[in-house]
Image (cartoon, rainbow, N blue to C red; front, side, top):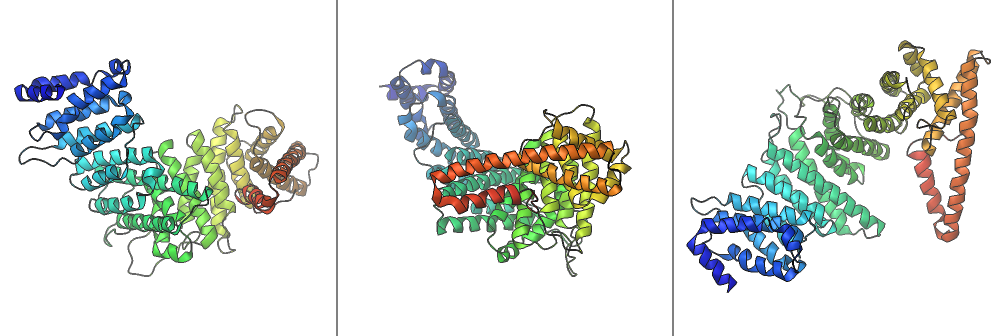
Length: 551
């Protein structure tokens, strides 16, 4: 009865029924108060039939799609299959002769995104992914909308969509590569959205793989998937960064630094040997990437985080396998395209030194990178000059920022003090010279602030074991050097020695607490003795301060 009535309304007046659909879209609050059967009847008789009518105008199908998105919060779960089936029809609707169905596809994409946002999930994910992927590549404007929808699908689907990511990424790379022009800056909007979608999928795949590792379920198929992702992403970045014409003077476009960093990190995580580094051209890609981030000025936390995360993985990769041109730049033989003259680590250091001067969380992340860059790589005697120059740049930036905030103790003191401490440990003479050159009794100012952080309970005080250990090592070196000066009665020496004793006691107490916790864990599971010891060693010694342990 209701179905026949809707047919009659369509035949009589399309415009009137469009108004009816608009009214249905505003019934969320009303429908939430009704029984689910009422909503089921309304949608089944007044909305869904529109998707099956061959003579229905596209704007009515678009309106029906919009209604489903608006009613997402009150749709019964048992209707999921019918609703998604209808929306997929709309999403895949082709243009009809001289009539564009673009508004229908856009409305369907928006409705599906609305359903997912309201946790109204499809009964099957693969058909949804297949339709979206099949549509990408037709029109740039539509591609942008489909990329956004794909992001929503991957984020909502979690493991349900993660297993399809290797195939999806390969398909998207083929589409995106057609719109990339290395000499064009900025990149077209469709490329930016494409990189964003790839970054979302790369992160989703990483989360998926971590869960599989925790469950000891790492199959050959998943390893193959990781390899396929890495090869596709490497090919895309090579096209974007390594295909600048020989006669071009400009560097590759610095577009999508955050998303590119996520993709680069995903490639790095796939490496299982030196041959993979060569196959994926990682050293070449990292040289260009490092040069681009060295010229980064659009500081924003949501974008910068991906760069910091990538820096840590780059250093870890070099420590495992060694990267060409990481510490000292290798100049390729001619003919070769224009390449940055700085090594990877030198270019990264420019970004990190600038980050020290930025917003608080960037300063904290920069401190972590300072220590990693100075103390994790193995510097040969020939390359020690590079480490010295890094220490000088980092020390100067950290003290410059410290001078600006030293009037009142704050939480920002801690990363700045510790960044200088990391520089001081590897090149004390250089650090002291820079601090003194900056004026205001630079070395004494820093040393006094260090003593304050060790002896006062405030937001400046140390809490993490890695922070305390770094402070102990620095104070020990400072005390030794001050004793060598021959002024044992100096106030600065006394403050340093007092702080050293107090901080050493604090570190010892923390070690004892950790041993007690370790013993408790061992009593619960004696089979994991060696494994637990290794984890503590890695966490406390290698990750941040692993190059010496004198306590």
